[in-house]
Length: 551
Image (cartoon, rainbow, N blue to C red; front, side, top):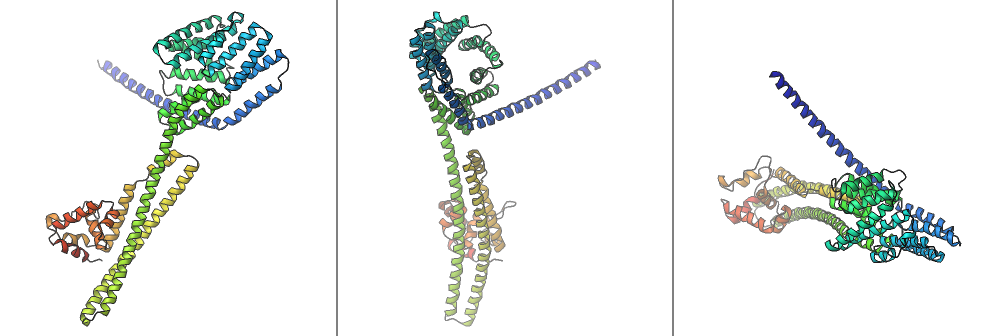
């Protein structure tokens, strides 16, 4: 029995350790996946910056083919076909031109096989531009019997794709079902002529299973294709994009997104302008909340769509572009408004400081005028001396207040100007490098509530340094139950600050409200409520406040 219990304990410990190991492995797997994803996105960013270079290389290669065009019709046909292959994913108008030229040369030769191949090419490029009726008009007139098995496979594949795309376009259950069924029949025809285990065989097999909802069979077909050597950048991009879509059913975040990024990389490097991956990647990142990167990618996708020239692709990309662009502009505008609010707040604080300095200076001037009047008064020497002593005391107190508060407010002002300067430089630098997310981080760190609390604490310390007995003298104007009881660590509260400002000579409710960031009505309510609780009359209360002596 004891041995059995020991076995249970050991087994339990083993299972716990196993779960811990599995959990740690899962964490490391996730970290590796996200690190790999981030690395792929950074690689895509770099490749997109070199997109013009790849385009120029493509144009240079095309120009070299054009220079070698012969006047011999049979040689011309081969060269036109080369140019068509280069243009069919690069520029619709040029591809259509060379597809038409191929047809003209084939018609001139009166070779049925060449004419049928030319029509097949024409159907392909019309399908790429979303011209479904025209595609079917051309393909329905192809003499399939004169084509070899490879070309029959290509012909039926193009026609199947046309019906599948039509089903997507109409987005209607009845007609969509009809078009999908027709597409499946044509896919079966393509499979009959496709060489076993060939690229074409697995491509059309995967496409048909995708359309019929056999996701696992479609995955097996496309997995077979993507592992093939010498697949070529364009074919890799097509297979990776399709696999990404298939993986999204079971794995919407990781491998699906990685394949989509790899597809976009292959498209960019092959200078493919008739691309879907970058458009889909933009949509995926936008939904995930990465608006900045989504905006960058959709702009690039829009440039590709405009370069290729297919209207349906421009419309599709343009719709998403407007949505993402609107969100991006909204984000930038919000960041701009936050900066303006912060700058406005700092400016107001600066003006409050300047206004306080002006008040102190004006008080000093009034005291000097009072001193002059007292000297001129025709009173007794004792009275004059008494008045002079009081005036001198008041002057000393005012000068002390002036010295303390001018120094205090200039230090505060200097600190805020330094903060504004550092903030301005940081934001300017981020704006120049389009680091909008960094600007949002900088702005989010601004804590106006903390700044105002620090300002209040600083004011409290300086005031109590000048009037150390202010709280006790203030409390003497109330009954014991109505006296102020401050919390631990609290220097002054709102009530005390209002009358501290009055003691400094600031009597105007509007000015007090601006300094303390309250409404005028709130300040008025505070003063009324407090005076009503005092043991002296309302008129006498502020006079007694002004009589509180400094240090």
